Structures are given as C-alpha cells and as structure tokens.
Image 1 (cartoon, rainbow, N blue to C red):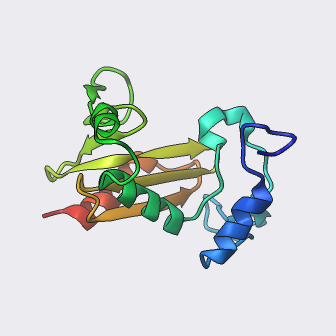
Image 2 (image 1 turned 90 degrees about the vertical axis):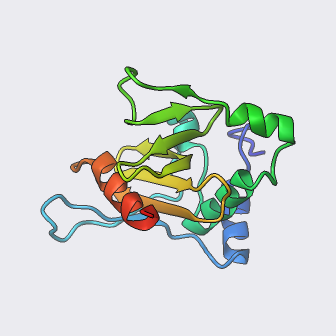
Length: 166
C-alpha cells in the first residue's frame, strides 16, 4: 500500500516486478490522427485514480495474458466464486459493447464469426485495452490501441475476429 493511495500497491513495486518479469518502466503512448510526428509522453507516473478502476493498475500485455489465462482456467478463484463471476446477464439495450453479456467483472462477447470470447477491457482517454480469450484460457489475445479518433470497437472486433475465427 502506498502512503498517498492506501488502496494501491506502490508504483515502484509494480515497476520492480515488471523488470523482474522481463518488462520494465518507460511505457509510452504515441498517437496522432494524421500519422505525423508527435510528442512522446511517458505515462507510467500518471495518477489516474480519478478514473476509479479504469486507472487502477499499471501493467504489460504479458502480465495481462498471464492473469487472463489463469482466470479463465479457474486457477484464481474457488469453483463457486468462478461460477458466480462467469454467470452473465445480457447487455442488449444498455448502449454498451454489442453482443455481450456481463458477469462480475468479466464479460462474454460473441464475434460476428460466431466465436464467443471472455475477458474484459478498459478505456482511458488516449488508450483502450482489450484482454479476451476462449472460455478455457487456451487461447488469449491482449491488445492496446492508442488514440481517441477511431472506432476502437470496430478495430478490436476485426482484430479479434481475425485471430479467433474458426
């Protein structure tokens, strides 16, 4: 827990663990709608606590893959908790991600090709992350998209459909 944010692990610990796992500090986001040169901003020290859970962690795609695989494989929760977490309700009419059903912190999404994926995503100005996989956790894909100017749902749908299409 950090002194300034008692509900969070200190960022230094997170970065030290990332380095130990082969990642490291210096995460940056580059984006420009026109594709031109842009100023690079190191966002690892940004305090995104104003966004609640959307800004609650600093991670790498490798960390998210490891976490998502373990979650989908049932290695993190007791069986009863896992069943409860993955019991979903449809989101139709909620003006949310199309073809989804929401559970307790996870959701399922049926792609146009008919494949259903499980996981989650997050959005903060300038960055969107999707972490989805098959229900058994045997195939996962974690991706991040920088930028606010495109249709990120269409981009992720195309990307995930290309990867998971039967």
